Image 1 (tube, rainbow, N blue to C red):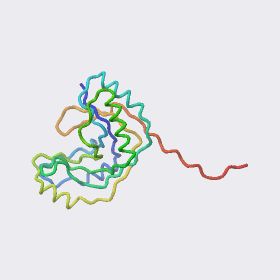
Image 2: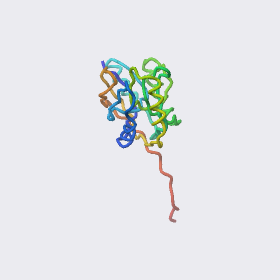
Image 3: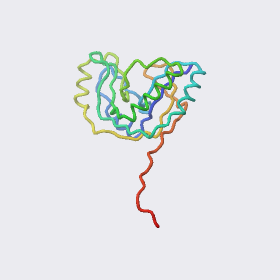
Image 4: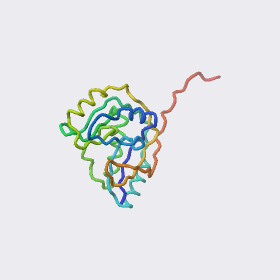
Length: 189
């Protein structure tokens, strides 16, 4: 039974910049750079028939390329931090694409996603890290210049049930269309 999710891949130069933020938190398990991604919709463990239906339904998504900007380092989990993440701005195009995928997958019978969509890439999973250590880390590395890229596709990933995720396998790719170019110049005549 595959475990599936849709995501945006992180280009290597952006991933390497994010990787430079690693280190300095006892109890952190830093994610491998090649496993960085922005999850759009976690689908979960599904049978092969549902996996085929989901892959087919996602092929009907028609969206423009999406600008992604990471501009904040934070943690999830409050007083019991469980992850350090780089958050992406929730630009309307990104939020709308995620919402369309949510609607498509719900129509196929997937349960609703219980969490609010917060676009991010997980940099570290935390086990036993103190809130104080995470706060100190964020205080020293919390500001970084925004990192931007344009996503030209989203993918359907599969993963094994493992600690910390990965390795992830691209099961299907879905191109996003480039924005039409404005016409310039004058017509000859």
